[in-house]
Length: 399
Ligand SMILES: [Mg+2]
Image 1 (spheres, rainbow, N blue to C red):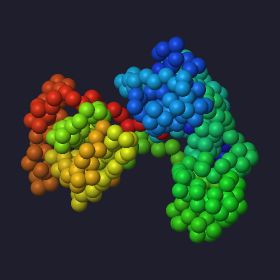
Image 2: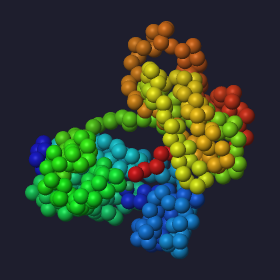
Image 3: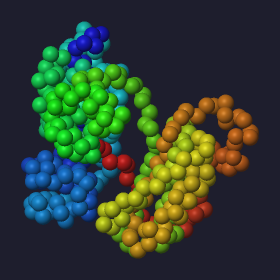
Image 4: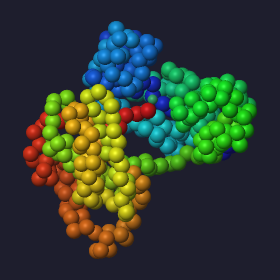
């Protein structure tokens, strides 16, 4: 293992959803394609070349790109492709850290003798994803996660970029400062206002000036990343900071009851996934999207960690109730719930009677039935009134 050499891969599928559509329908290849219907969830490179980005209202995208072909999303197909690609990642190295459905870090530093240099491994990985899953994937190779991530982005589409330690400055310093991972539009604007446009400009500035300009956290980060200091290692089996789900509820008019039923179904799903993963959470976040694509987010942090359906549902309903005055007549089209501030569920806690809500036993029983007979086998009473008006859940979008 030689951490002084470039041996971290960042692998990232190109325009994931749109590439799957172009793979499955040859008539879409070489054409500007968007996925999603009213909202562009993903678009092909041909569409990006016309200035289409995500998310963007389809109407606006069509103005920019009159030849744009829109196809409906097929999330089950995307998830199948994601699983196949991750199977190749895990086949490449045991050290895989998934970042989203279509990207991961892979540490290949220990594989030189059995599998070759990081560059050889990256070339093979890209070829396998192309041959076995039919999708283009870009890979960045570097000494740190940050540089690998920036390198894969710079190599797109369908590229491979290896940044050896001696090339780090030459690669990173000329890039615009927003290319630093995690530097958003606000920080970028502050830096630009002061005449700092490239990573090199920021690197020359020194830590104190950056902190004075951007505040402690952002200042430290920009200073560290522009100087290639990124000590983060690959975290195997890294667990997500939150577990969530969302449901599109269509464009028809809906009542508060409709939204509540959607909420119950989502909370049920999220809490079940938490219990299965043996995770407890404290912060419940409600997300709503409206016909005009505007969104609102409300969050509440509970006093204690839980994975208990009724407790999470109570919080979610209170959050929803608090938004009702603001959302009347706005046409809610999507409801999402996520639970964050996760921790492991210590098994000892389960046997302490006073920490158990009396309906927690019900959760266990329902989980068990759903496990054995499928999630449609048992339904909470409120869902029985469900009129079938909303579509199934959609996974959170990849970056
Ligand atoms: Mg991607």
